[in-house]
Length: 155
Image 1 (cartoon, rainbow, N blue to C red):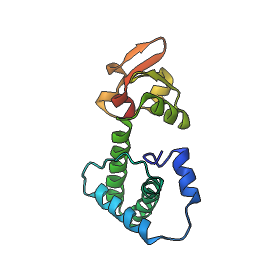
Image 2: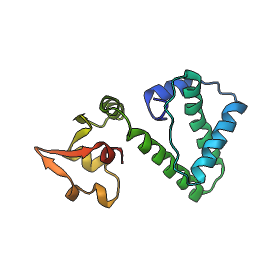
Image 3: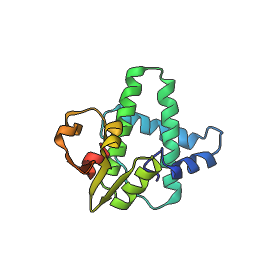
C-alpha cells in the first residue's frame, strides 16, 4: 500500500496526517522530487516499519506539492513519468494476489493466477497506454479476454 499513493490504504495514511507542514516530510518530499527529476530510475525498498511506510506515502504528497510549485510543465511531466516508473517497478515484483487486489481497488476487472492475467477486451481498450508493445495486435485474445503477463499489465 505504501508503494501506491492512489491506493485506499495510502489515502487513509494521508488523511490521518497533520495538515501542518512538517519539516521531516518536506525534506523527504524534496529528496523524492530530486530523485525523480534526476531521471534515475526510482525504486522502492520493501520495508516493514510503519513509520517508514508512512514517510514514503507522505513524501509523495509533499513531492507532488513541490513539483506543482515549480510551475514548469516540462519538469512536472518528468516528475509524473518518474513516479509512473516507480509504480511500474513496484508492480513488477508484486504477488498475483496483491496485483488483483490493487486492480480491484482501481475498478479494473482483472483475473489471474501465477503471474498471468486476463482482462476483458473492452476494459483493455479503455485502460491501455500508448505504445507499440501494448497494441492489441501483440496480444492473445480468447473468449473476449486479452491475456497479459505481469510486466505487460504493469505498463
